[in-house]
Picture 1: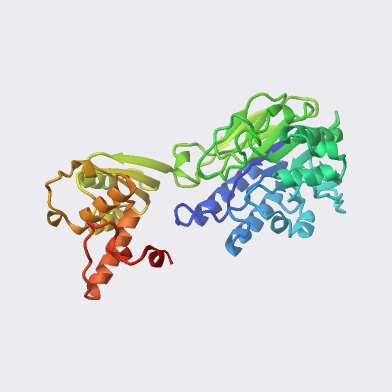
Picture 2: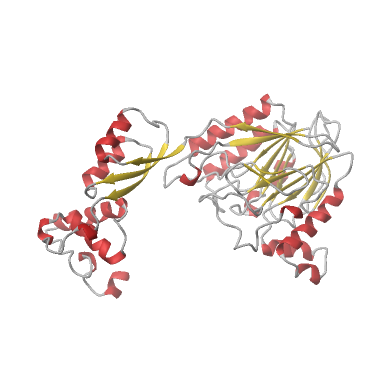
Length: 433
């Protein structure tokens, strides 16, 4: 049996407001092509299908198209669980239709699946099922797969699941103890003649995190010990962490497939992939990683030579198809015109982080405010009020736009050497409204 493990699609997610639907369509095309080329029998999508609990119509259409293609008219098994970003009920709204195509959707740990037996023998068959588990017969496979599929197990959701089958003493146990109890019960469906899998969406202790993940662990309270996973499992397919990685300490391979796209600059330089697993009953898993080529790379530029060096790098074609986080070292603060110039140089520049050589400590006590430009005076005011080196370029741009509006209306922009900026010269309570 050949299994493709993927996770954390985050359909609908943008990068600082930049639309990424075309990149998401591209990675779906690539994953579908891999499934066909590698003759995959079963796809596991381990949560965070969407970025938002209320996904856009475009994101939902992309998801439905993707899973329909992956299922190959019911000839390939697909199992999908909700992650911490997903609305469980919204994700499973199409479950009755999905069943007919060999697609299994699980939103909450307490959700009870039902067997589904299509008339045609060359279609995926759900031969047995229950709360957070399913046994599947897959076309072309001589053995069944038993999957303990636990959607994002929040504290409250675990209590709901345990309340169905255990007493109050079990509910009061710690998070790891409760997870171990649930996986122990689910593994009771594993057999020696089946391929035995676990999938979930959680944080295993020691995993490498990224900025684009919403934390689901509070300190160590929800950091899962690898020992909670049942020894009978042959492979543990996880979602939540965006860097593809293995988790040490389990009896079987425990793996995060990672996100198919880099979703924050903390993921710059990461190779994205899906995981292929070959399994037979009672045999160790054969695991390999297939790198993905779709999606723009995320890169960080540190430009120490100011605007001239930046222009040279862009002219040379550096990272022409990338999203760029730019750290730009300057002798003077950026002007509004320079910000516009930078945005026009490379459409992929997402963030501009100026590092200005002149800080408020460099301005001598005898230097007259009248000798500074309005931009420099605003920056000095900002530095005095916040203690920071310089305002964000977007804030500076907004200030200059407001300033120009004031000038267009014939008003005096005021003096930034006071305790408050001109736009807040009135009462603080009025400014806050």
